[in-house]
Amino acid sequence: MNQEIPQAKVVLVVSKQHVKTVKSALERFGKLDRNSKITPEPQRQQQPRGAEGEAHSTPDARFPRLQFDVDIGRYVDPSTIKKTTTESDEERMRIPTLIQYPSTLCAPNEPPDTEEDLKFKYELLEDLVLSYLFKNISISYHLTSSSRTSPVSMSPLHKALSEALNTLPESVLASLHLTPEALVSSFPDGYSVYKPMLLLPHNAFSASPWKTLLATHPIDSSLLHPVWHRMSEAVDTTHVAINSPIPLQTSSPSHPTPASEHSQDNILRSPINLTPLHGDFGPPPTPQTMTSPTPSDFESALWVHTKQNGIYQTWAPLYTMFSRGNIREKTRILHLPPSVSDNNDDDDEVPSAAVDLYAGIGYFAFSYKKSGDGMRNTRIKQVLCWELNPWSVEGLRRGAHMNAWTCTIITTLDDIQAHTNRVSEPDFYVFHMDNQDADPSFNIARFPVRHVNLGLLPSSERAWPVALRMLDRERGGWIHVHENVGMKDIELRTRGLESEFRKLVRDGQNKKMESVRVEHVERVKMYAPGVVHCVFDVFVGV
Image 1 (cartoon, rainbow, N blue to C red):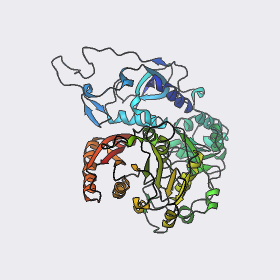
Image 2: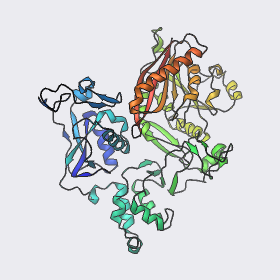
Image 3: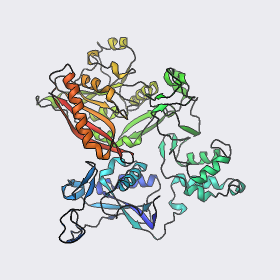
Image 4: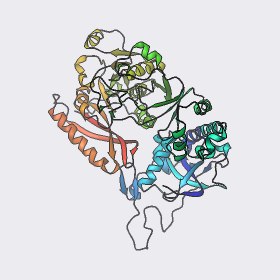
């Protein structure tokens, strides 16, 4: 476990353009140090010894001090790392926080050069919902007069928790040798608010004091109900639940599927271990409601929502997952360059379509559509979506309506035929069926498909041939492949993907497609220590 430097707190160093965003995030989670000012970052002067890229040993040494480049996933000579305009030219500001700075990290103001440094930074920014600014934020620290957090500086949630615990009969905690202070201090900082639900992290009650309390007084006991109610009120919500990672397989006897009651792939990505604490979440899931819900089931369930980049998304948390950490990729999609091929100078004026073969509630599909709205330059006018989970399909439909987009649901081949002679075009076609049935011969898309999103983890390999079939045969386009990759293996996986897609292209029917290359690798977020969620932009063209 990291030992904390007494009175040392994290400082987030950011460019001026991001100060408001970062400050607001810290305020939301009660982590802004209001007793310290936001100040400019002092200009670092070049030093003859120990300067960046030079040795820290004798004057005769000529070996550079390597640092980790997160863009390529390996250690390099610092002089070879490209400096962005933000890094080199723009004044940067120091924003003080109340977050403890671990002593095991590298020295402040130095680039993070160990896996532990990067992991701390990723997790810190993810807790603040700032992971999409990973490249724009650096970590330093400042010294405070006291390392103890006063009640005034507590987050609204921790303050409410403290108040609620102090209203419990003294004998309840005393008999267990516990205090409100011990419980509050061991409660994690991170949480999410998706109106009207407060979502606590999976480790909310993993500390020893909480295990002791809950062993005697279960989490759903009447004694603790006022505690969850007070916490909910503090963040202006009406429901509380504990999050849990989405399992790759289902094995819970309370959530069997029609195919089998044993462990099997959780292809619907259902959050089967979410635990409601407070509020009415609707009837508990059953095999029937999970796979074949009725309109009444949809109306009975709790639906929550959030807004990212000006886009609404909504889902039923007992049936559908949501990952806030993907906002980096959603933001990137909004700023994709126009789809321009090598052989047609007029292609940038041609409206196009995007395909999402694992659409969910519109996680990425909505960003593709918004990227083509108004003055944006992607020219994407329509998105074709494939999704198996009926609750995700309903969430996508509701979310599209919240964003003033039109949506048509396709459930059978007869539905496809009925829409081939339509007069108006919806913004979204949502195919509630297996993406293996996707085929351009449906003649649904009135625009050339230039982007295909493959957002399934850990692998979307099953859909690669489908993605190639969906790309426009005359212009080609981009396939965006999501994968979890070891940081040291990114370059190797890049070459591997190019090789595998070249083989698929050679084996395909469209002989015009000859060019295959990975144009870009986007590191979205840390998936696990040493493992990164990456998006590989695979270009396939003529």
